[in-house]
Image (cartoon, rainbow, N blue to C red; front, side, top):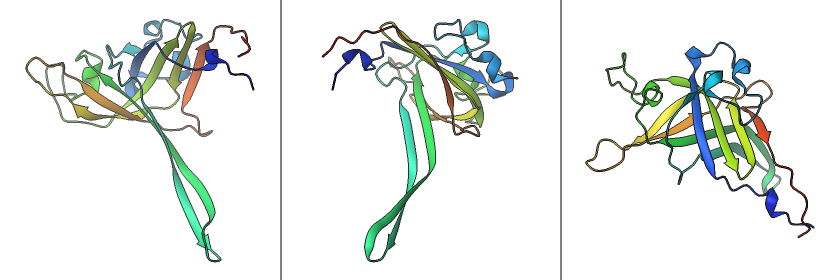
Length: 186
């Protein structure tokens, strides 16, 4: 068995780009042709600085149903209702984050959490390899935790995106620009 350290993923940079469901007529028109494409030109909005220590956590889960029979525990096991949640922690309180972090009825208002649905594009790089994941369906974004207003502390909003799958069970389009790696024969 050959071990190829170049096949590992150690991201160097990650970005979060968003589009409100109400602002998207056709998501296929917003899918970039390369991972390095200008997302702003495709009408994506940059969320701003995110917490690089937390990055973009992924939380896949599935419901496990065990059936006991014939005197045996877990005689049969079925898996169903798979889910994927992702997240990010934004540090900036800018025009983009204001749309889902305590959105008010106007720009000069602060409101209560609402059912805000977004399309999200996650772009990350690992050396010369770039990836951009674009959500195929709008998904609710939840502000899970807010840092509040603390003297001398950086404010933050920890967000969770509850992804919704399409009819094929897919949630993201993955566009990648991967550098050609030769097997170094480890």
